[in-house]
Amino acid sequence: TIKMGRRPARCYRYIKNKPFPKSRFNRGVPDPKIRIFDAGMKKADCDVFPLAVHLVSGEQEHVSSEALEAARIAANKTMVKRAGKESFHLRIRQHPWHVLRINKMLSCAGADRLQTGMRHAYGKCFGKVARV
Picture 1 (cartoon, rainbow, N blue to C red):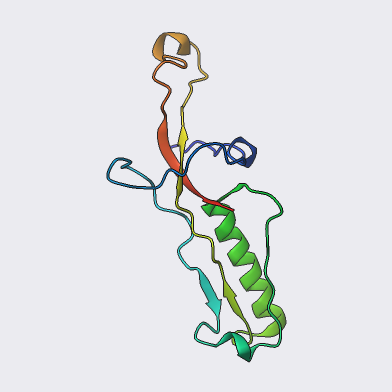
Picture 2 (tube, helix red, strand yellow):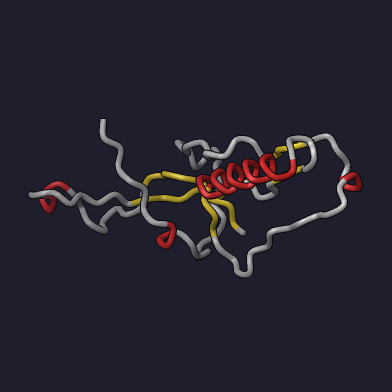
């Protein structure tokens, strides 16, 4: 089976609507790609380390669960390589709760006879993002 590529992040970057979490009304939501939110020396107190670094967004936007997972992997790999396995604690505080929807469009020959365009355009759930 051929899986379609994801839409670019610019399509879902800005916070426009109300929060849309998974609930009994909103079913069929895919699981987020990020599973692990802590890395390094997890049980250590914050006073053990000489430095604390926080990454803060300058504007309100959506960050996808795929982007959070990629950032976690890159940061963890760099910290393990430079500082060692037990000399840091990495925590991702934002959790992807907000559900994104997609109104799939066909782009093949004869698509105008198969689809309805913007009629019934509510869309299917296809990913989760964190509202930062």
